[in-house]
Length: 200
Image (cartoon, rainbow, N blue to C red; front, side, top):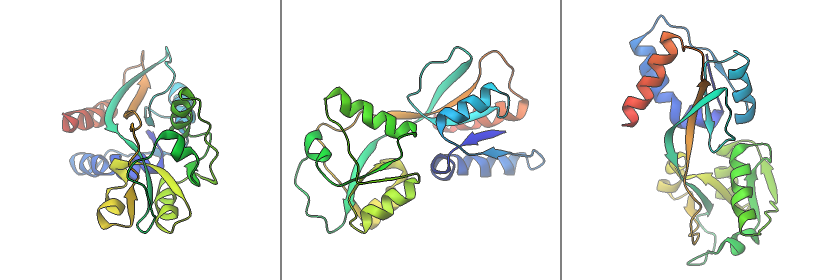
């Protein structure tokens, strides 16, 4: 039983799920989808063995949370957007922003980092789906904040362009959470080992 959001499932877990199923075709995989903080609660309540979440998250004595993949948040705009050579964090905050909803851990990470510089983000549009962040930026509805590693297709094709933020946002990780004092099933252990071995 695995908990993960749509974006992490699509852009990170899918290839591992495919390989795991090919290796262990008789093992049933159950997937659950929610926000990171809710998925952590699902693990604590025994509704899921593994939760793949956006880090950072608050430390929890009941959970072991290990980083699985480093990611970089960037701002993007439509291909025809008349962008400057460089943007400060204050510059970005003045733009028409398209951001994830407040209750997402990715948005919390963004708000927290801007707050450290005493900058408040007031987005024009708030949405729940990472793919819509890319789509909305591509049709010039504003500037979106996305995960670079999950936006490569749109960046390479030229549908969107990266905004040069100086300095860039700090990097973070996708993490895997599981109960610290419970033994994982053999299936969950095998899936986690598959991810960590490939990561190396």
